[in-house]
Image (cartoon, rainbow over all chains, first blue to last red; front, side):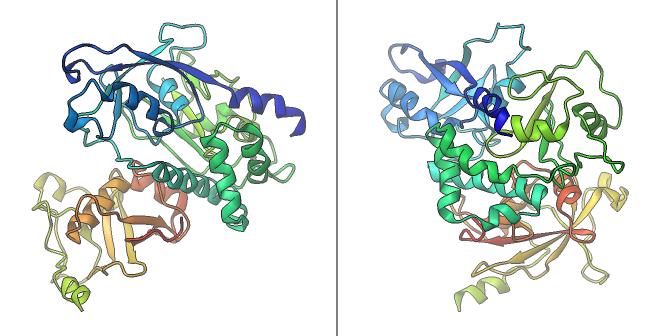
Length: 267
Length: 134
């Protein structure tokens, strides 16, 4: 895995330029300027919105400026508990050759918090959500053995790595979660398949066939949908269109988000 | 024992939304609930998942622990249901765990959790009002 460090770093450094605009009906007298940020794909919106909230707070009515901020993209409310890269790939990414949604233009709201979004009162809520997802992933990979053997400080190291965008801090601990025996791989691959306007799909999927053959991304998608997937579909993981013949164990070790899940968009 | 008094008010027929959300899994015909919605009444149980709801710590216990729930219902639905059932405020928290291991994503379908984490033929959820397994 050491040879692949460059790939892990490249994935980690994936960023999305975002243009935040205050929603039209929310400013009082004058329209504030938009704010542009370069945001890590691996991060979560509550970790990056502080600056945005401060920038727009003085333009909204006094009673609302301390409200919980939420975002929409072209009318789709964005879930803060999905990694930012996943939200972009699912709703805005038209494929690696198409740059029409760069920067990604999002509307910022202080008012009328939608019922379909979860509340996020503090960064601790994000932390606990993040660690829960890692635990679920390790339950699939190692029956939870590795994450449960870690101490609180190890969990914090994972979280702080994500929160502060520190590659070394995160990966020096995360590599333990990525350990797999040669020729066997993880017990199951933690993956979720996302499509527009549908709940995500998650199933038990082993990285090797009974005869010991490496299963590929193509195998996983066929297993998920029960049929061969049309070649006209756009498949995105971490903003990349991987070859359908890529072994799924390799993808899981290298293209998973920090929450240890392979988040796959099919559109 | 205010907690106990509160518990005695838990009636499985009582539903905060005025309709029965969970179909109880029980062989006792006296207490077996039927789906009030006639369009659902004829649907088979194959799309339903048996779940157990077990209290942890000082969370109020439910009168019944076993329920049948549509595969397509999600985790958030159970959390909201428990909150209303226990008459908690919206700001209060319910923490829900699968197999004493992890808190599932609120938008995960019950069917998905069953497919990945079932115990026997059911899913065992533990709920509490303070965080238990992180």
